[in-house]
Length: 86
Image 1 (cartoon, rainbow, N blue to C red):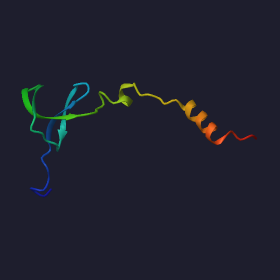
Image 2: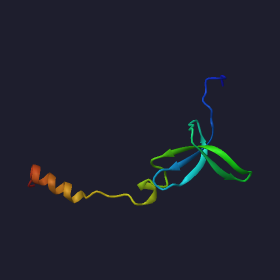
Image 3: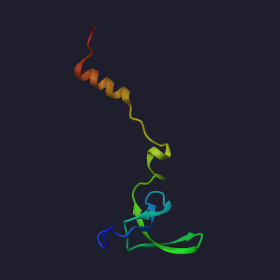
Image 4: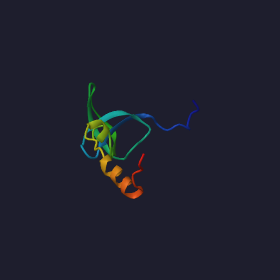
């Protein structure tokens, strides 16, 4: 790789804004905010990036996904365009 053209890739803590859950991973994102994180080697300070939605709060992963009422759409279609007779 060429030197000086790639962003820094290092450990970053992401925090879910809705649930407060945090996880440590590697990223090229950085932030002026920091957080103390307990590791096997002791406590370290990492950049903190707050995200709106993560797997901890996303409806698909939590099982709270809403299903829309299909029956209402079908009835509205029939009212608008009429039902064909066979």
